[in-house]
Length: 109
Image (tube, rainbow, N blue to C red; front, side, top):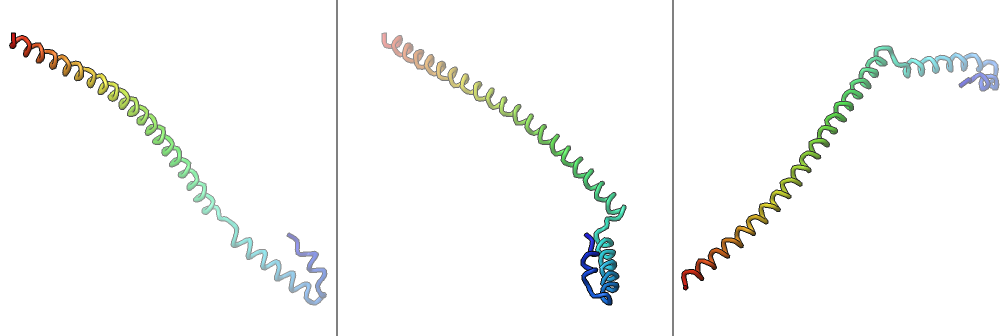
């Protein structure tokens, strides 16, 4: 931003000292906000490290998701196996009851 237009509105005896003051102020502001090459490289390296970390996190998340899918499928299979086992146990109980009844009836004759 140019301060020149404001300086021309000032009295002549203040104009030059104000111009020097504004120049000094601008120089100081630039110096404070300029990023050194070392700071810039450090920031670049930090961004690269963060990107790599994010990539590894994404890979781990994918692996966890795949493992969860395998686990979910295993639970489904175990649930089905449990259901089948319960059906077989029920049939076995029924057969044992029928044999027990048949045995008792045979003994009574």
